[in-house]
Image 1 (cartoon, rainbow, N blue to C red):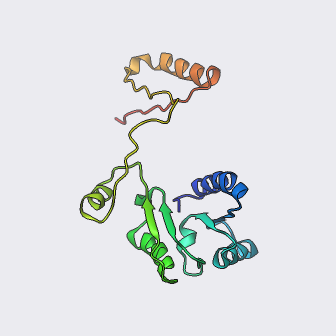
Image 2 (cartoon, rainbow, N blue to C red):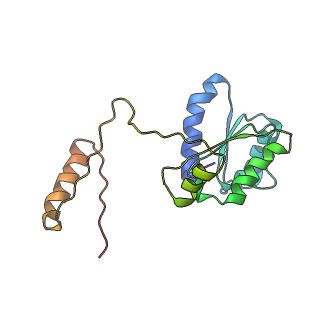
Length: 171
């Protein structure tokens, strides 16, 4: 489950590329699906025709039933309420399963930190870049050099196909 339709759709497209060649059908369910398309997707999920479901808040709605929910992965878990995450987990218990849960975040918010410290959560930390990934460079440059910065960033993005994040403080 992902917090936005765009992110959920990106995940679904990637999972289809990876899993459908292995015979694992991937479904996608989001709020923008309406009418017959939504009903068909819900039926495929309930029947087990779809083995993996990617979606937004739409997947924990009451009318969505799973054939055998065994694993729940929640991306950016802090964007969902406790009751929303619990509603999805409980869908597995309907069939007598206790689905495993993997909750992910890159945002160290206090509630998440408290859950890892005082709750029954194990923590996995990704503390290194993937092999071959260029290290991130962070610099602070005076505002008096703004035009030079703009030119350097434009050239790096356009000519070298590099990426840049520009963070400005608010006065």
